[in-house]
Image (tube, rainbow over all chains, first blue to last red; front, side, top):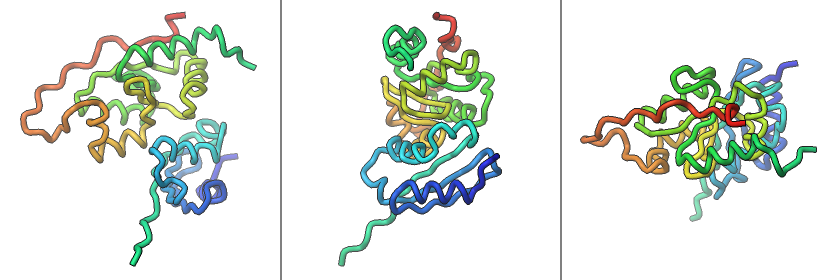
Length: 79
Length: 132
């Protein structure tokens, strides 16, 4: 069974604390823009690994391709 | 239960990574990439005039298996610079756009006014499977 954008979004948001994911895709190739405070201070490669870990061995298999862009939420203004 | 010692495939991959300052593990080869993500990564490296070694992971499924086990990175392509994983297509693209990639590769940005002609990429792609 192929994956859906909703499933990908929900799993990322459940797997990464405080994250918001915007996911597009066609069932095989997906693109996810993930924003989470958990990424703060991490190198990009570690940020992407957090997303990879949500899906484990499904990446490259059931989920054929997942493009990832990671963002940290804008810092709260301190007045 | 894989034996961590005496794994010639993993050793060959590790050796290729240590011996080549810039090395791309991809599907297909730079002249004929077999996947859009590999094609985009090659195009980015070439547009910066980067010299890089390339390994096609398709001829033997164990290359990808061992590479991913070694790098803790599930997808292809994978770009290594000075022995360290930089990332896949997404990270390479982001770093290209921000100018970080040229910096990581020790190259000037292509926007520079007097950029010399890019040197051709090193000869034949590496073939890990033939080393065994």
